[in-house]
Amino acid sequence: MALLAAGYLLLQQGLRPPGLLPTLALIAVAQIVLLNSARLYPGYGIYPHECLRRRILTWGKVALLTIVGVMLFTTDWMLCALVLTFLVTALVLQLAFRAMIQSLLRRCGVWGMPAVIIAQGEDAEKFRRYFDENWRLGIRCAEAVEPLQAPAFGLALLAGAGPGDQEIDSILRRFEEVVVLAGVPGARAGGLLPGDVRGEIGLRLRSRKLGHAQSFVSRSLDVALALAALPVILPVMMLSAVAIYVVDPGPVLYRQIREGLGARHFHMLKLRTMYRDADRRLEALLAQDEEAQAEWSRHYKLRNDPRILPGIGNFLRMLSLDELPQVFNVLNGDMGIVGPRPFPLYHLDAMDPAFRARRCTVMPGITGLWQVSGRSSADIRRQEELDSFYIDNRSIWMDAQIILGTAAAVIKGDGAY
Image (tube, rainbow, N blue to C red; front, side, top):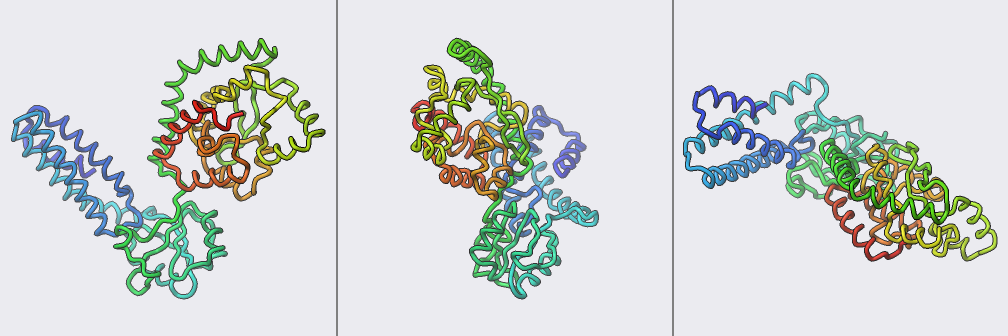
């Protein structure tokens, strides 16, 4: 809004040198992107002085890039002066508009995010009063409660002495985001100050939930990668399907119910790499081979699996080509490119129920951290550790690294069977 108002005021002066409108549009886009990356939309949990610092730094970056760009591509000093005037006007209007919009949103009851303060003694009440008085921080606190009585809000604030180690683990599992509060006037918190955490209300222990912008970008990238891969994938799938049918005539695609985001069941697609009577063959083997039983209980896979189609089955599994049809699961919105693997239900039944519930908070993926860290050689405990690490630390950049690592793992063929 401030950028539009600044542009309108500038254009009203009647000065429109060539290139002005495209330049202003690029500046507006750059401002919005940088302000969003500085977490100023909406800016909850950041002190006003820190918001001002980040806004000024963003303004300076855009101004510097604009001046350099104008000097490189034109000698029109009038354009340069008008651009600087636009930037200064936009900065002033942003500061004024932000305060007005915050006040308006507060009156409508939609400013701030709900939070629970978890602490012992009087500290929780002190923090609650502080956030009520300093409502621009965007923290709307419920009544202070004891750690184990806290309802599962999206945000938990740990204040003062706080809970013990066991209670911390429970809190981390139940909340989307957990923040250890820094001290405020009248209530210190373990020596941690806002200046120690870049002017924010505290130290973030966990933020499992991607923001709306990140979620949109992540989903857009998944769809774009899937569509771009189709021209390469389809011929490989067709040749593989022919080879499967020659070895064992019958359906070449395998559909199995898997558990996805929000515990919703969906049919995951794979190229069939096993005989059609695979279940009978497995039961017969496990009934007579104790070593196979032990291996199955650890990995839910067998290194020498009698169910695998000779030749083509091992080849497809070694290069993970049997997973290619899951591109259609990605396009359908059931899966992403990267995420915890959607294991069979019998595999999930062997996992801790709390951990299984955590896996359902993220979209399952074609590949994941455990695939690039061991693939089939990782036992169920190791799989839980790797999936937990991914859920706690996931980001677009981590996904990109996993995609690169997947390519290397497939080429090496380590742990694939």
